[in-house]
Image 1 (cartoon, rainbow, N blue to C red):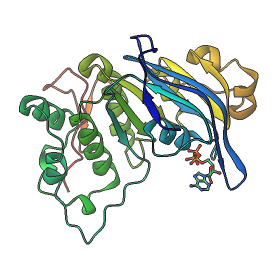
Image 2 (cartoon, rainbow, N blue to C red):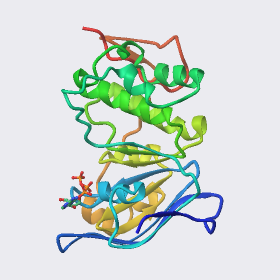
Image 3 (cartoon, rainbow, N blue to C red):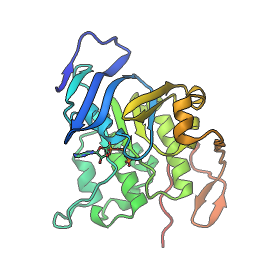
Image 4 (cartoon, rainbow, N blue to C red):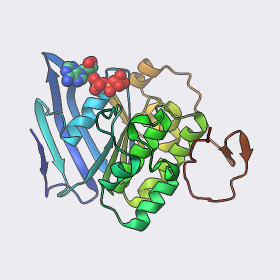
Length: 263
Ligand SMILES: Nc1ncnc2c1ncn2[C@@H]1O[C@H](COP(=O)(O)OP(=O)(O)OP(=O)(O)O)[C@@H](O)[C@H]1O
């Protein structure tokens, strides 16, 4: 069952999964999944470990073949995917600039993306030698250079320090307006879910509940998984951390991520 371009989708819908089942080695990984992604939406998939979040993403991307169900997409739909794990081979030396050159993109947009993701100084670095946080920024930049209709992020905050994480959240939230893409993210960070997301889908092999973040957290299946006494974080930052100095940021009011402090 592969993704088939469909003329039957409404123009506002980018992709739709209908009654998807994934069964591996006689185990149900996903059951009866109905899921729709609209233009410009930010949707976060939440759920416990092993709930099938990455598998659902891979079904949408066409990497995992469902045992049953249907995948409908707009014609010529372009995805970008930042996977949970990215371990480039040490036997294949690759600089950041080489990785980014794999995506053809208008030079001014490329310069903007490199600046906003804070990776300007990493261009000559070897991809294999990047820190976890640097790698996440580079992978996000590369994903954006594709200028996708759907940007898929599987736990993109891994390896980021708290300041970079907050900046990345702000940046990601700005992307639908800036580049016209929809965002599908897997996250365990319920603070992000409540603050940054238009819609939440709570998965535990099946879709337990979905909707506006404030509604989902009232749902009994959500509460059974995550509990009832979560205090959601309110993120406010009016300064940027460059190294140890939290001085007001003078250089840019748009969401952007700062480079990691130099040693
Ligand atoms: N190729 C595979 N072969 C066998 N089992 C698999 C395969 N891919 C996934 N699974 C199993 O499917 C289940 C769901 O995995 P998945 O990675 O989708 O969960 P997840 O919700 O993303 O988990 P986590 O939050 O821990 O990253 C797990 O039990 C996993 O072991």
